[in-house]
Length: 334
Length: 153
Length: 121
Image (cartoon, rainbow over all chains, first blue to last red; front, side, top):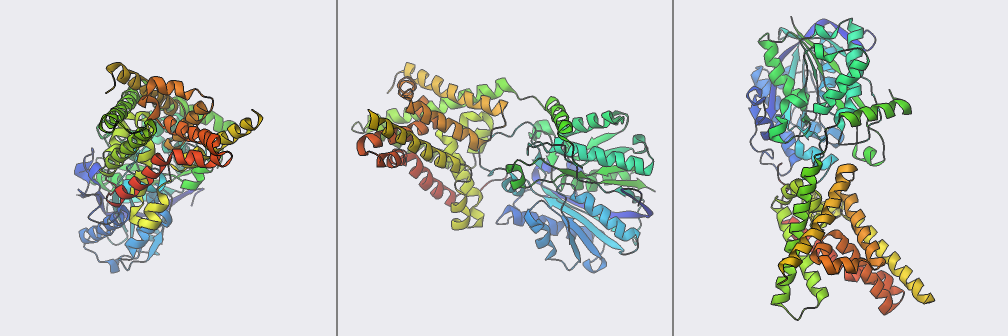
């Protein structure tokens, strides 16, 4: 490991991916890339939490079917979500017999899962690993914000939690051209943002810190990558990151920079203010759209930077500011 | 990694400059229209009650009007329409007593899945609780002040 | 039935009070709960200093329907309670006067939510 970055001597194949997107996401710009779109985000369940669990169970099952594998073939699953005590993932894994590591890094959890999974495989500890995350608008809203039927206006800086589940299969047995070559583990960064509605601005400093650390550790420049993709900074967060990077003499405008939160919704028509967020946001966009572009060779070197705001209901109310974290994963076609 | 206070201040200023502007004219006009309309509906209800039951006192008409408005709000919240009205009209839906009623009904509906007693009932006042507490406390203080003044008059 | 002019007065007073609320939402980061409390206290205060009656005279429902009206009902109840019953009226009066709003909200809230479910956004 060099400083904060792991450079994988054996780059790890991302052999298969799958996504299940919610109805709103299914009406967004990326709808034709999602593997499945659900029409009813309650999925016939008694609660939205149960619906989120059901989505997660289906996603894992779909991935196994697509890869022609059974759960016995999988050494471990790394997954997480936004629910208290990550009960979503816990109850999902009750339906499977796969060894399980539950993770929580808010919306950066997917990044955490990819890094841990890749490390296990690259070092030969494991051969096949699943990395998955879920989130659901209705479960996040009732947990962190307001009752769904409350007639309040969403502030212009708000983001829309993505409803969906996604999985990636990392494997040393099923080879793929698309490989994880290095990863930078983020550290917690707090620039003093207290507005719980303004996640993008809270997370931008963490994204900046991790991206710059990654570039320094790997001795690369911004233009090494075809695409730098942050998780869910949203439109205003994207502007904040560009400004912050410029202050450190990195010009994001010279490279292809985008954000999963901005990509997943048509913010004007779908009225999602700043764009999407949530543990499934970077997962859905990467495992569908980006993976396809990598497969087609349209993208060859992507730096995926899932970002997470590490806030709880109580920390906000107690006047604490919002710390954030971002992980960077370099995925290259080899 | 934490920034020092000076750094935080500088960053927060940067954030403020970059944030999307609030559409003042649009939001204020909508609040104006919705607020005025709701109050007119209330007036109409009072007038109709006065016609239908001329023997009712002013006070009772007022009470019935409030009850009817709360019931309508409850219904609209229950069928999932009120939140759309609120999203459109902002303060125009929050400031009238409809806002209070909507917050009570929406909070209870939200937690019904956790059971009637521990879910629905426990959470009924999660948004509106301060209104009850501060409302009653402040009225008691006012009453006390008047009582004390009365002692000296 | 009240005259058109009366309805105009109702509309303007109610609309102005709500617009003031929107100003608060736009320029500060106040949430729903805090807005409700601020307007409630304004109503209590205006009633306590005897000014609310004038506004009510002119604005009618435009003054009583907003939550400021609820605040004034509470305060008025406490003041009259003290006049009629002395010290105990301070506590009893406010709660009694606002009974319709409070009791009604609880009962209606309970009954409606028994039969409703929160919807997908």
